[in-house]
Image (cartoon, rainbow, N blue to C red; front, side, top):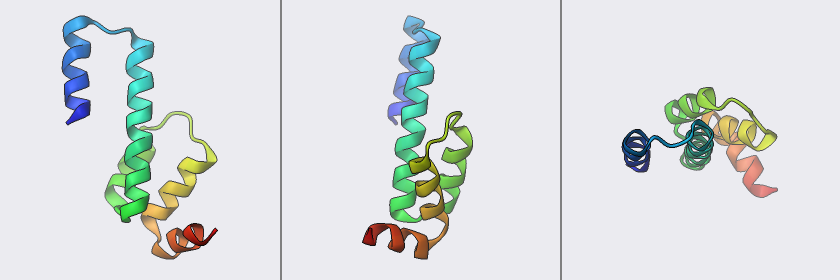
Length: 77
């Protein structure tokens, strides 16, 4: 819902492209974290594809969304 709200106001007030890209990047990173936490494969795949610059933690969250054993191994550490 926040993404829809942000999109509405970014069109209405013509936000800078840099601000829009920064918000979308953070939005998809947050979704990827939640996908890893709740083991949601589809959301993890979608969010991971939308990210342009991928850090190691993004790969960790992505694999945690796909593999339950990977998520459990990471949670132990």
